[in-house]
Length: 233
Length: 233
DNA sequence: CTCAGCGATATTGTTGAACAATCATGAATG
DNA sequence: CATTCATGATTGTTCAACAATATCGCTGAG
Image (cartoon, rainbow over all chains, first blue to last red; front, side, top):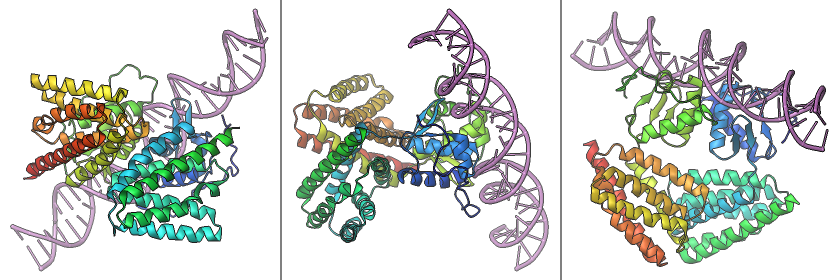
């Protein structure tokens, strides 16, 4: 779809880091590209040319291919054999699926909650900070804090694998957010919900917390789908 | 640990497939290596030398690197920078984590069960077949069917992403199974449980089903940990 | 005999160039 | 206006090379 090579900033080699750390180049670049993807530096559905992107980051085509394989397996890129790699453009179906998985994981997290758990403490802290940032009108920060809040919630399970899987989900979701203008409306209504949730969990009222979470997920999913719908028109 | 290059079959190029299909070589080889890993064709913790493995499959080192990146991100291989790639050797900690995640996902699946769902039909079918194979004494088949049974259970959620994540878990579990001798004991006691579970789900008795599943996961986890313990001595 | 230091060797990390296979583009044709 | 076909661009894959790093075996000191 998108023709090749017309970024806002073309021709500038982005790579310029200190001689590299201990970890392989592919991993470093992978992180950078992921950040750029969720920051919206590449348009959704945009084709990523190997030559161009490799030059942009100052790495070889072979190394870039490893990066593409990684990000493709994480759902942030889509690979059509012999046609190239494209930025994923998650649609309504993807959002529905993501929220289905969120429900399963996060309900499980709520069920695993125990008062005093470090993750719960962190949730409380994040909810508080979000409230403050909302007062300051920094909606971007509110969005980030909301993400971290839910990430912390999954941390209640004490399962690295589960947290990792959830992280992939959130990354994909952020890809969707990138396409939506009114991100404020997307996160703001829930800073109160988050506070309520923490209180319920601290009191060990798991059933009530589960209900609260279910309501959140339902509303959140709906508002995203609505915003996505508005986009396509 | 394991010194380089002393497989049972060295020097023989395994690659010999028709000129390749439509999908990239890396994907094809990735599937093959994954099969070999869960089949135990590589020992746990064994070092995989790029040159050797590349030659073994008749592919270039660069292509193999893409494969390694894939399988590493799937948890079947472990990558130590500048040291190489090793076959993952999931220990007790990994098993505990895997079962933590299984509990979350499969409890969610049970909760999502609705009578008449295609996945539920498939579960019934698989449970029945396992019973037959057990009568025939084909324990390997019983194990496979048990796996498929639980995979089908997750399918109850109708979430491709969740099913994919669960698939990774199962693959890692199979890596553990590969190290254990008495696999019969590992699967046999549960063919009855599976039947009970299907019945409960068909009757919509979700709470009872959840209990049954919890008991299964607990016992299964314990027996694996015990077998693993026995190994180390 | 044990162990630290050190050099030789092997392996990984990364690049560049090359080529066949495949796809996309657009012009010529009916 | 649709079809065919040649052209060019891009992907898929390999090879060869090199620097950086790790591994191994040896020597020598204690």
